[in-house]
Structure formats: C-alpha cells, structure tokens
Length: 68
Length: 269
Image (tube, rainbow over all chains, first blue to last red; front, top):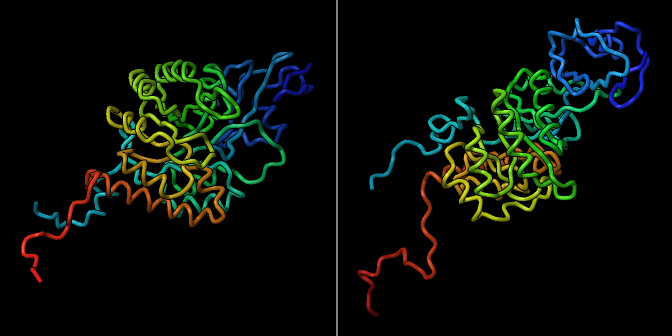
C-alpha cells in the first residue's frame, strides 16, 4: 500500500504505525521538535505507537527549523 | 523633584521585567532564529542578545539536515515561541500551532497568517479567526499583526496574550513606518505590545521602546547583519536604553527654543 509522505508517494507495509514510519525515516521517536499530522489532523506523541496508517493516508512529518 | 538615588538601570532588568501571560522574562528582546548562517552563529547571537524567548518554525523533515536546533536552544536556556510562518489560511495556522504544541511542548505561539507573498503582510480577517480559535483551544497567542489600532484591539478582545504590530514588512529593515499608529496601539493596549518585524538596526528598536512598547522582536536585523553577535549586543543595548528613556519621561517637542541657562544675572558689558 502507499501513503503520501510529505507530498510524495511512499510504499509501506500494511499495519505500519506512525512510530514505525519515523523509525524508517531515522527520526528519533523521543526527540523534541518533531510533529506528525495524518489527513490534516495532529497525531499526539502518545498515539504514535498505536496509530496505524491507512492506504492513501496523507502524512506530514515535521521537524524544528530556524525561523521567525 | 528629588532625584532617585537608585541606579535607573536596575529597573530595566530587576524591577521592570517583561511579563507575558503571567510569565516573567528577563529580557525585552525577543529573537527570531531565521536567517543565521549556522546554528553556531545563532547560539552566539542568542547569548549576546540576552534574550529569554526565541522563535522556531516547523517544516517537513530533511534527511540532509545536520544538528538539532532544539538541542542548541535548550542549551541556551531560552523559552521557545513556535511560529506559524508560511500559513496563508486560518485553518493551516491553527493546525500548525497544534503541531508545534506537540513538537515543542509549549502552548505559546507566534501566530502569523500571511495575506500576500510579496509583502508578507498579515491577512487581518484570517488572523482574527485563527487567534480566536487558538485562544479557545488554550493557546497563549502572540499575533503578528498590522499596525492597525482597531485590529490590535480586536485581537486583545478575543484573548491574545500580547499584540505584535509590524514596524514595516518582515525582513525589509525599513524601521517604524507609522509611529503614530504604533503609538495609538500602545496607548490603549491592556496586554504587552511587542514591535515585530521591520527593525533594521538599533535605533529602530530604541524608538519602539521609547514609544512605550514592552518588547521588540528581531530576526533578520540580527541574523543577516555582517556581524550578528555584535548586532545582537547593539540592539540589546538599544532596547535597554529605549526602555529607560520611556520610563524617564522625555521632554515635549517644542517649536521654539527654551534656554537651558537662566536669563537672570546676565552681565551688561
């Protein structure tokens, strides 16, 4: 199945959780400065481990940068 | 009038703290982190500025990115103020603020809703809509706003913790283009007023403070200066000087001269 990850298609295994996706992306799960939205809804940090991604999900994985 | 014996400078930091939403901040300079050549330049400028509150942003992850800005800011012991830079709708700004709350563990947000990419001026109706929604969701909202006294009042009315009118467009360095409007905003505000955007150099920041502004937010003026550390220090001093001058009470402007040396006892030759 495929998801839209930060605007690009990406194949993932069925049942992949948000936390597993972050692991594949080499994003430390415990790090501050990371946030995830799925289908324009915030996925709270405490739900990364239990939230599985559906086929076609629009996933945004964000990190802190300099700005403002 | 009896001169005060206490050193006036004591009041700048010790007895005269900036308080936003009940939180005391040790500096009246808010620093934006955008535009620095490196995290090392940013860290050095933060230290020179004495700031206690710095902005951060959220963007899509970049596998090539090196170093963690959050680690650097934590080491600098500054409070984080996430922004919603780049948002053009109330919906995007609200979602970005909620993501920032997750990312940084703070409910403070510098709310930006941009109406036009050329000027980066705020979209007033969308800004007000987003501010109201975020206040209702428990955020401490610091909106980047136009130099419009009525909009500033409306933002305060919906519960914003401060209002942050622009001096001139972001990154323009044109200083305070409408000191009259900025003064009108300051005069009636019941929350801290923070001059945000447009500062080019120290005198701009000092002028904002002399107008009675509670703080100044600078980004490009420091980060894009030839020597960001020296400029951070200079603007810090300008803000302290401007604050002192405001509290000291300036003389009124007059059309004609007023002799400072008495006329009595002038000799006749």
